[in-house]
Amino acid sequence: MSTDALLPETEEMTCVVIIGAGLAGIAAAIALKEDLRFEGFTIYEKAQDGVGGVWRDNTYPVNPSFSVCLCNVKKKAETEKNALMQGCGSDVPGHWYSLSRALNPHWKTYYPSQDEMRAYCNDVWTKHGLETHTRFGTEVVRATWDARTHTYGVILEDVVSHTRRTVTARVVISAAGGFMGPRVPEDLVRGRERFRGVAWHSAEWRHDVALEGKRVGVIGNGCSAAQFVPRISEDPSVEVINFCRSPQWYMPRTQFDYSPWAKWVFAHVPFAMRVYRSLIMAKNDINVIYFLSPKSLFHRLLRRGLTKYMKMTAPKKYHSMLLPQYPPGCRRLIVDPGYLECLHRPNVTLTYDAIECIVPSGVQLETGQVIPLDVIIFGTGFELLPPRFEIFGVGGVQLADYWKSKGGPEAYYGMAVPNFPNYFMFLGPNSAGGHASVVFVEEVQIQHTMKLITPILEGKVRSITVREEVSAKYNTWLQGRLGRSVWNFCNSYYRREGANEKITVTFPGPVTQFWWLARRPRYSDYEIIIGKEIVEWKKLNGVMTVLFLVVSVVALMIIQK
Image 1 (tube, rainbow, N blue to C red):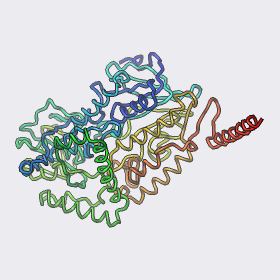
Image 2: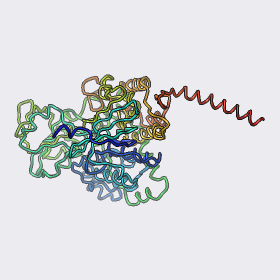
Image 3: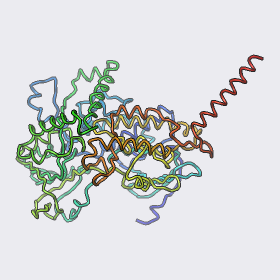
Image 4: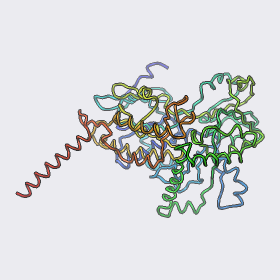
C-alpha cells in the first residue's frame, strides 16, 4: 500500500459527525433529527454489514428457543435448565435495555437474545429514516480542532481501499460504545501463529468451523465465555476445557417468555409498557446498595446468597476454585446463563492452571504440561478505548496524553473533556453502572448534549468546552466515592490495569442520581465562545439582566407619556 493512499483526498462539510451506528449513535441521530429538527449530520460506521454495534459483532452461538414459557407449567418443569443456556444475549432486561422513545412491546423473552437485539437496532434505525445519514465501511481515524474556524478536521478511512478523505465538522460525537474490539492479553498471544488448529476471539466467531468431535480450549470465564460454553458443550462429542485465571461471582438468572396476552397489553394498553419498564428500572437501580460498600449489611447478605447459589448449582469438586475472595460486584456480576450447571457435563473440564504459552498442538501450562487442542476460543474481553481513533484539542493536545496526565481516562459526566471543544462522548469514563442499563445512561448524556449543541447548530455560539476546574472537582468527588466502593477491592476492567490504579468505568451511585446530576446543563460549568470572545456565563446573565431592566424602565417611561 502506497503512502499516497493514506493521505486525505477531498474535503467536505458536515455539521455533526457521529462515530458509530450502535444504539447510542442511532439515539443521537434521532435526537438531532426529531428533537432539534436538524438534518446536517452523518453517522460513520466502520462495519460494512449494518447497524447494531456489539449486537452486530458478537454472534457466538445462540438458541432463542431455549426459554421458559411461564404460561405452561408442565413445559417449564421440563425445559427450565435449557432455558438458561440461551447463548449470546443481553444480561439486562429488554424492556429497560431499549430507547425510551422506541419501546418495544414484542420482546420475546425477559433477557433478549443477540439476534433479537440486533433486529431491534435495525428496526429503530430504519423506522426513523437514518439510512441516508449513515456511511458504512468508513472508519473515523482522527479529528483535529482548528481554533481559527472552531471546527474539527475529521479524517475518514475506507476500510476496504484504505483511501482517506477529510470532512469538516462543527461537532464530533463519539458513540462507539464501551466495548471497542476484541482483547487478547499479550502473554496469551505468544505462539498463536504456530498453532496448527483454529483460533479465534468470541467477538469474531468462526461459524464456518464445525466443533463436532473436536477438543476445544476456551480461555477466559467472563460474561461471553459464560454464555457460549454451555451452548457449545451441549454436543457431547465436543470436549471443552475452560482455562480460567480468576474466579467470578454468579447470580441466578430468571428467564421467561412473554406470553401473547402480555405483548398485547404492552402494545395496546396506554402506559402499561412504560409502567412495566419503570418497575424494572426501580428494581434494578436499588441494587446499587450492594456496590457502595463491601462492609454493609446488604453486601454481606448478597455475598451469602451468591455463595449459597454457586455451591448449590456447581459441582462440589469445583467449589474451592469457583468462589472468589474479592467482594461481589468488584468485577462484573455474571447473570448465570447456565454456566455453573453445564460444569456437571462429563465433556466439560474447568482448570485454573496458568497458561505459559500456545504451542503448535495446543497450550502449554506453567507446570510444563501440554494440553492438546483442535480449537482455541478466546473469551478474554474487549478493549475499552478505540485502538485507532485519535483526537487533538486546543493547542494540539491529544486526548490520550491528557488522560495520561490525569492518571487515566476521566470526563465531566462521562461525556465532556476540558480543552476539547464541541466534542462529546456517550458512555465515556465513569458513566456505566455494574447494575443498570447503559442505554438509560446514554440517553441522559444525549439529552444533555443536545441542549449544549443547540446554540452551536443555530450559529449563536461557536464553541463550548467544559471548564478544567469544574471537571476536576467532579472527578475528585467521583473518585472519592469510588474509593469506598466494592470496585476498589480487586483488579478488573472497571479500572486501569495494575493494583490501586484509577477506576475509570463505573459511576458510584444509582443511575437515577446520574440522571439528576446531568438532567440539564449548568452553562456556568462551560466556557462558551460567541464570535471571537470567551463569554463568562455568569457575566452574560448579569449583562442580560441589566439590559432587561433598562429596556423595562424605558418602556414604562414611554407608556406613562
